[in-house]
Amino acid sequence: MNAITLASVGVDRACLFLAKSALVGMVLIVLLQIWARYGFDHPFTWTEELARYLMVWAGLLGATCAFKRRLDPTVVTISENAGRPRRIAAMALLFLTVIVFLAPIIYYAIVGPDMNIQRGFLWRSSNRTSPGLGLNMALVGAVVPLCCSVILLHLSAMLFTKEHKP
Image 1 (cartoon, helix red, strand yellow):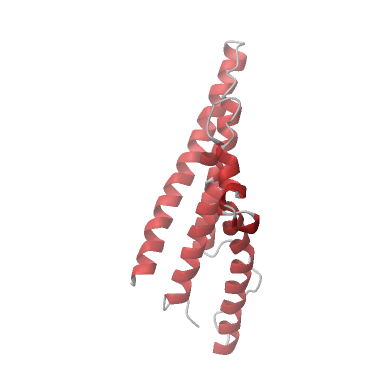
Image 2 (image 1 turned 90 degrees about the horizontal axis):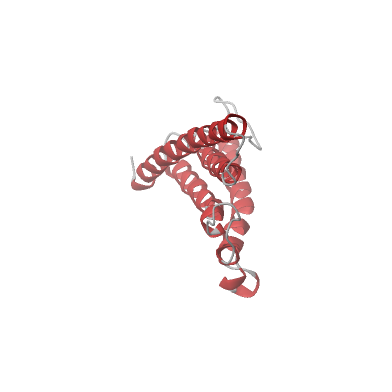
């Protein structure tokens, strides 16, 4: 295996662990909310917000794992016995659709219009805090460019791995 494939496998393992942890955390937080609301008749103010953020992180990290395993919705499905030109065209189409979709997301997460970092999504998010937890919203929003970058890493590994090469 080459370095990109090894990095992709390692990052995938970490993303899968974090996604599972976020799901377990979300379930536990919701159960705590239910217990506090109906058991003590005094619900916590922060549990719904934390469960929501964990759901976002779990979903996006899980999306990277689905992409790595080719379980995500596909634009083109090619059978195993398809010819080499058709497999090359399918990989090119996959590459183009992923780049066209993710490049603007990463770009506008970091910089905004006119290449102004202060107008980027993360910078604007860093100026806000969540109402219940007091969390910096850049910590919550950082999952978006992070997961897009992980998907690009997995795409690179697909392009440079013999199993996925046409």
